[in-house]
Length: 229
Image (cartoon, rainbow, N blue to C red):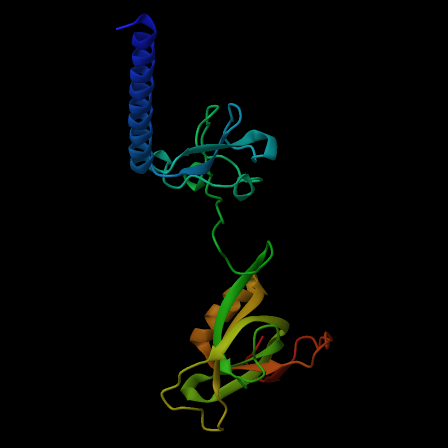
């Protein structure tokens, strides 16, 4: 066999082996891609990040990783995290998502009262259609005298805001004069809250009188009957 022919044979064999190798590599790469899944974007820390500070755009970076290795819960876009504080420090390159974000404490929900005020519950006679949240009422308290008779009626509170109200269940449906009962939550002072709590026990009757919108005039202490102070 001539030298030229031998060289051509070796060159052809090399090309054949190279093609087989390339085919095998491509096949292995395809199999690996099938195992790893497609690439997905995840948000990572662009630098070492401390806990507590709201995240900024420059703190974040996006990295493409195989879907198989993408951490569950990792954010896909930085916009989902900007402005939100971290619960703990995250090193550069660390994945970021909802699990790393601090849970904001909503605080304890409470009644809409100001310092020095209280939300006092009272059940009294009044029109449910008018004694509603946002309305203002006067509170009349009728005491019971010895022997079960009426001792007198006092204008106990004036221009009180109603925070919440609903029709109160009544075993008798209504009182003898047909007036329905209303369970209302009122914005009052501490002293007024104590008085209302006591009135629920000693009063023969409590009435809630709706005021006209914008009417903030006060009558002052008004008592009808004897025995009220």
